[in-house]
Amino acid sequence: MSDTDYRFDGLDEWERRLAQAINRQYPEEFRRMVIDVAAQLEGMVKEKTPVDTGRLRNAWHIGEIKKRGNEYYIEVYNNVDYAEPVEYGHRKPGGGVVPGAHMMELSLQEVQKHLPGYLREWMSDFINTHEL
Image (cartoon, rainbow, N blue to C red; front, side):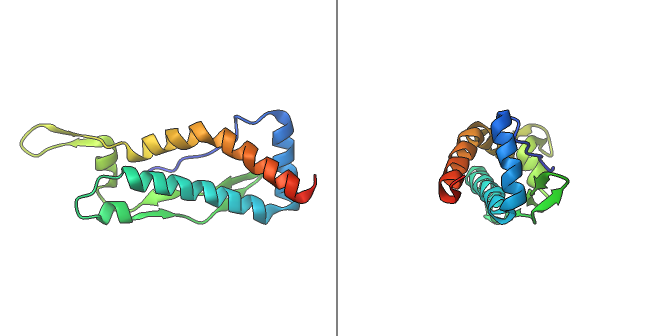
C-alpha cells in the first residue's frame, strides 16, 4: 500500500504555533498523539478489510514514527501481496472485475474528517494539563 502523508492543514495559525511549541517543549507527548492517530487509522482500516482467511485483516501494522524537519511521519501499512488488488479492485481470470474494497481510502477519509476536532480536543487537554 502506498504511504499517506498527514499535514495539519486544518489548523489555524495560533494552533500551528502551539503545535510547534508542543513539539519543542513536549515532543514525547506530541509523538504519542501522532501514534494514537495512526492506531485509530489502523483500527478503522482493519474493520473495513474484507475477511476470507483473516490474513489480510491481521497484516495491518503501524511503522516507526519518523521526524523530518518539523514534520512527523508514521506509516500504516500491509505487506500482504494481494492488499492492493483488494483495495483498488482487479480483473478476474476468465473475465469480470472484482470491485475494490477501498478500506484504506475510506478509513483515511474518516480520519481526515475527524482529525481537526480530535486535534483541538487534544490541544485543549494539553493546555489544561500543562497550564499553558
